[in-house]
Image (cartoon, rainbow, N blue to C red; front, side, top):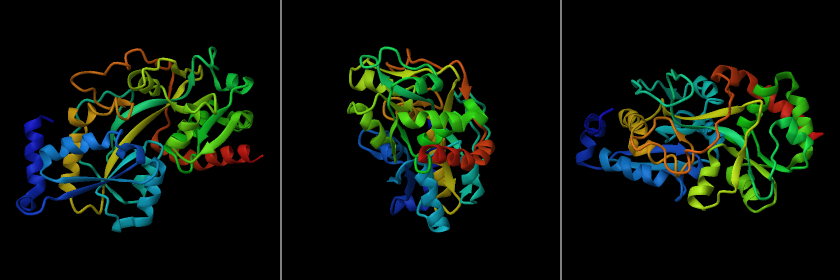
Length: 330
């Protein structure tokens, strides 16, 4: 959408309240998004510069916790937008009836998959991967089976509270199918801990307490750009890597539905997409005019991308998490 048209739409969305108190748009998202080093502050400033409104982010744990909170609050939620679910949760989220169709005409997206979801729009994506330190591990495992055969220890995230944790469960399920329980049984002895969320888990790796941590193929860009540390890398597995596509949607009970949809339009412009690579350290859903920043050009891309449809993910989630839990409980 052209900047002028977006600004005009935002002015209409603000309506007569613009002359009085500025309307407030409330966005539920995950904690790292709203951190001072995350994308939230810059995105809020960029949107408020054109919307004549106040944008308030509310951190609600990790991505999977967002849906749980919304279910608890139901139609009485103060959220106008939920930002931070992914395609493993969108079918389940839509089935709650708590989201409204976005009704947007999409610009061309830079995703490896086609997009036609009537409720949710993507804002970034990457591949799940295990990140390691080249200096500590010169020869990383090249598959889950190689990881099982190695002496490496790892940290993973709880799929019941963490979207990356659920992504790992889906990764194993997509790669191995009926053999997934056996893979989890083999991985169990390598798992030092199951962290509840991203910060806790990745922090163990950064502190040198584990050899590898569940993260993304784009995570090493952070270390190269922000830390000046080229030693961190993502291990590329021969069976392929599961994708994560993160999305946002408007709540059905929003008292600012037009402003919320104007935010979705803004979300796919440079004012949002240009912030994502060096704050959320993911690929933007729509490539900014300036392209990708330094540190992203040499990132490895898996030869095989794995992704269940939202409906497949919804059907597989409970049995896959059950198999994970049983294997780790032995």
